[in-house]
Image (cartoon, rainbow, N blue to C red; front, side, top):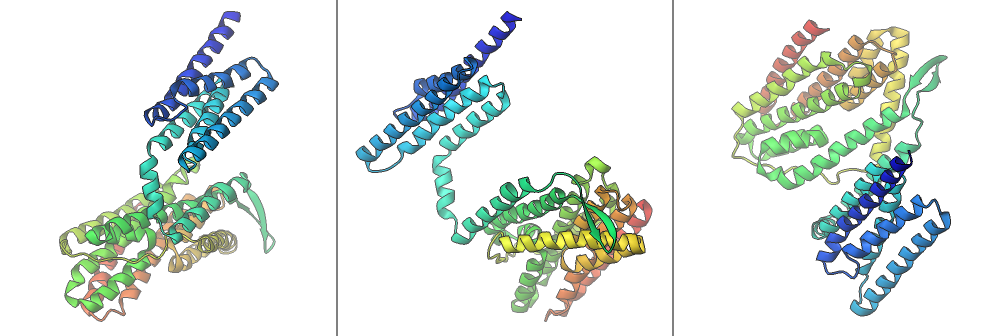
Length: 415
């Protein structure tokens, strides 16, 4: 037993030193005052303090690192007139912390901190370039998203919460509802960047990735473009279909991924799959792929919209639960259809949450997801009815009706 403990402690010291050396590689390569030897020693010091089980040594070691880093920073400011040495001082403290983590038995955590920290050091130029290219609205959006994902989410109850509505006790999972809000917001942010980067290169990117962020925005852009260029309706039709395909992909992902622990809603796969594949196939054969169009998205994400989205999700969950209790499956489906008029993601989310809590059956949840998707597609068709080019509306309506008919047949076969 003694040999086992000694072997383990020796291994921890070796790993701590190795990770300190790893962190020091970039500092050494950048010709900083603290390189591989200094950072390896600080990492060893952290591990030694934990193995010795000495709290005073742990505190003194941390103070030593902080003082050393502060002196380097002051020296860099006096010599070069900037605070670049702050990064080296922070890296020294990270190296010390890595040693503490390794000696505490948190091996994965220690390695993760070391690797991520090294990556941040190596990607200095790229990170500065990205930060410099961001607009104020984009920085604000990123900050607000961080609040949602890393501040609000952790403080929400991880268990089911009983909500009494009209004398009925409904089970709601706050974290699941909020996680779906964060997921939809994250998809919007990622695809905002994709649309900003590739939006002018073709209808495939504009329609499909723009549809992830906002399928309504895609339809609005196509209406304006067709109004200006009536002869370009073929790729405008393709853009709307691809936006619907993107919406169906999102709803399919939500319905399956968030129900894995309760039994995935596999009944949505065939109907939504037909909508996705059919939309992509029609767009591929009918669009003018040489044409381009720009889509304007003002900002990737805003906090007040997310809070409103979360409120809508919660209201839909509660309304769906009440409707299902009072009127059975019909009540749930009516709620899903109404939700689809505003957001198919909202209708999908409410069905998923109610299914996870056991309030509704898999068949009812599947029908609700599909109905919300179908209603949303119908809204897009209705929006194109105002197009000056009537052929644009007729083609969107015909293709959408055909795809929904195929999806209805598939639904009848699986539900």
